[in-house]
Every structure is written in C-alpha cells, then in structure tokens.
Image (cartoon, rainbow, N blue to C red):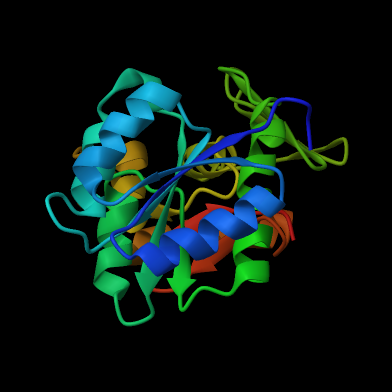
Length: 229
C-alpha cells in the first residue's frame, strides 16, 4: 500500500452492509467514506474525490444506476472506478450498470475476502492504465500502436483487420473494464452499418485465434473485457 491511502466511497442504504465493507476496507488500509443513497453519494464524492466508488443498485431517493450516470457526466469522475453491488438475480441491473459507465460489479451476499481481493485488483488497474497513452497501449507482452495500426505480441508483429484492431484497442485501453455489446457497437461500428451481436462474436473469435485465449474474457450475458489471465 502506498503512503497516500486511496479513498473509497461506499453508497448503500443498508447499515449492516456499510459497516461490513467499511471494516474490511479500513483493515486493508484504505480511507473509507459512507453515504446511504445516491444523492448523498454524489455530494460526498464531490467533497472527497474518491479513487473508487461502490454503489448499491436499489436505494431510496436516488438509485445506484442514476447516481453513476450523473457522476459519469461530471468531468472529475470520468475515470473514477465505479463498482456495483448486485444480487445474483439482478442480471438486467448489471447490464444497465455497465451501460451507464460501471467498471465492475460485486455479487451479494458479500464475502469479505473476495470483496477486498476484487477492490485491490480494480485499483491495481491504475498501474496498467499508466501504460496507456493517447495512441499506444503497452500491457503484458502486447504493444498496440493506434497511430500505425500495428500490434506486436512478444516482439512479433500480429496482422489484424481494421475492425479487429479497433476492438482490441478499445478493450485494452481500459483493462478489466466490461464493455457491453451496445457500447462496443457504438464505439466501433457507430450507426454507419447494420451490425448484429454475431458480428461482434466473430471479431472476438478472430482476436482469440490470432492472440490466444488469455486476453479477451467473456462476461456472460453482458459483454467482453480485456484481462490478462
């Protein structure tokens, strides 16, 4: 842990959940701040500028989805990590969360060790993102040069089609972030052509054939993410 403690904001309307997460994250060395609804969460976030925000979905006054959407529209929170707490039966809510800018989700019931491990891993992504410039991504044994449309794996050039390259760059530019199919379509194909989910799946399969299975992970029912395994 660095000398400067990273800040985490927890937004949940259940006192027991707040207490459980707060206790375990403080024990890990984080600074922890609390709010009991989305509105208060935004207020606290503006004051303390957290490195990561944990949001429950179902809350009074303002739910987590709306709070995330509003914060993502504020420039200072554009790159803040946001994680949702979700029940296993809330797959639709998970998709909605990713669509408004969530980076990840943690399933309830909460298991303290798994929670801390996930939070540590998410915050470690900062070190990976430090290797991402406007035009180049260097992560693991991959170098992805957006300006030259070139990819090197362990020093060897990998030939990718234009859309394969753009899809890889999108995913690798935010390691660990889950991109829904809708966000992939919007970022890669925009509205210029009619593209189906099958088109995305084919491009993902081609990337795996050329780079191996260790880079692009499937998040069932949601989309894809770049994650070195």
